[in-house]
Every structure is written in structure tokens, then in C-alpha cells.
Amino acid sequence: MALVPWDVHLKTGQLAVFAAMAATALVTSVRWRPRSGGRTAGPVPEPSPPVPLRTPVVPTHPTPADPQHAAAVTDLCTCVAELASDLAQRYGGTY
Image (cartoon, rainbow, N blue to C red):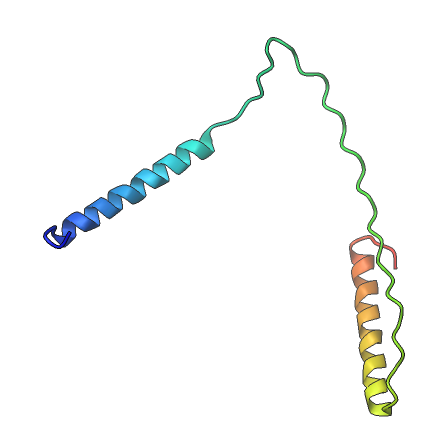
């Protein structure tokens, strides 16, 4: 391979990339149709209504004995609960 000029390497690489892209485009553009074998397809059933999401309830953990740490944990839990409530209202869940 050391005797082959670089422009041949470059053109070969470009040709290989073009062939790969063409093969990918050909394969992905093919539409797969189910074989009916002379049978006609029946009516398509309507999709079922979406299932409402339920928010999992996590039990609270006991607050630590350190009052400063306990206040921070309580504040964080309050922020998370408010965020979960806002998201549930925005996306139609119940909280």
C-alpha cells in the first residue's frame, strides 16, 4: 500500500463512502408491504385511549438531628414536591 499514491487512496475512500450511502438509501427507501395472499385487510381498530400516569408516592424520610441540615432537607423536599405538582398539572397527571 505504500506504493499507491495518496490521491488513489482518497478516491477509493470517497467511492466506498458513496457506495455505503447509496446502499443505505436504497435499503431504507424500500417500503415493506405485508403479503396479503389475495386476502383483504380488515378494518383497522381504533387505538385505545392513553392510560393516565400515576405519580409514585415515596414515603418521607426522617429528618436528621442537625437543625441546619434538617431545614435544608425539608426545603429541598418542599421544592421537589412543588416541582412534581407543577409538572403533573402541566402534563395532565394527578398529584
